[in-house]
Amino acid sequence: MRSFHFNGGRIVKTGLAIFLTAVICEWFHWQPVFAVITAIVTIEPTVSDSIKKGIVRFPASAIGSGFAVFFIALFGNSPITYTLAAVCTILVCYRLKLHAGLLVATLTAVAMVEVIHSNYLIAFFIRLGTTTTGLLVSTAVNMLVFPPSYKKDIVTSMERIGQQASTILHQTFTRILYGKQTDEKESELLIQQFMQEIRKTETLIHFEQNDSKLYPWGGKKEEGLLLAEKQLLFLHNLEYHIQALLHISAEDVSWTNEECDLLMHAVTDLADYLGNISSDQTHPLHLEKVTQLFWQNQMSTTSNGTSHSPGFPPEFVILYELIALYDVASRLNDHDRPKKHGAVQKVSEN
Image (tube, rainbow, N blue to C red; front, side, top):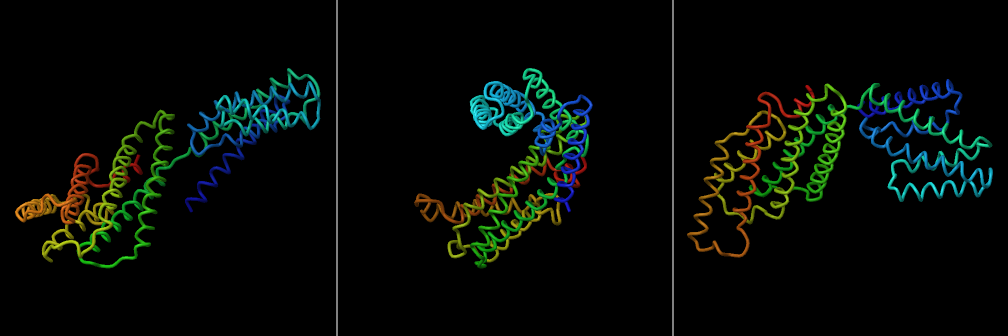
């Protein structure tokens, strides 16, 4: 449903931009085909991209039009004209780093060969007029008609990432503490999907932040987006901490069942926080108990004379990573998370 809604909006905006562009060109008695081509490719996922790429496409189209007029004047309507107009346009646009406008400029240069037979200078300026019309109309339509909005997509992705993070964390510690076997390929796939979802959400937040600056009422969005961005950074760091635990198994640790249960309670609490299942904040009591266990293990290791053994003991790594995750989550909760709802909820409300 979301995909259909998004594509449907793009189709409607593209059709409207084509219609308005063609009407304006007909009113000026200009051939609309060049303006329509420009209007089609200027409907970008974000308004800011439409503006930025439009600024690049205008001079690129001018270059293509200039080469087309020049070679038509020299060789007329011939195969060499098509070739030289296209090749020279590509070379110059590439050298000037007008990559976003290269395709439009090349199409314009090639299409002009067929329709220009005289009045070359006038034809050149008419092409600039049609290009400008296509750019302005499509940008205005993209900005005012169904403005691109990714708030719902951000909310959905953040919720999915939280659930994936919760599952990964719970599975990892269940395997380490209780020796429960998990499918290694399935775990790797889950982590891969987790990272892909994070990168996708980072892109959506970037899109939303860029467009929010173009609207006078966009300031209210910034706070919610910043909260989501900070929470996303924490979830991104989760992957690094999990990677440090992947090669540790239950045979490597020497904790009692009571100590394992204590750690699992702390892990469950943190997993609930990530998944937003039952609580809006982590419990400091769990962190305090884990920290006490950490120092007890340190004292025990030192008293046994193994503090200088190569590498870190598995117990040290497990407790350190868990405390690090807990500490960051607690500080994120205290300072950045709204009292009743998650950061993603605030994005939705804004």
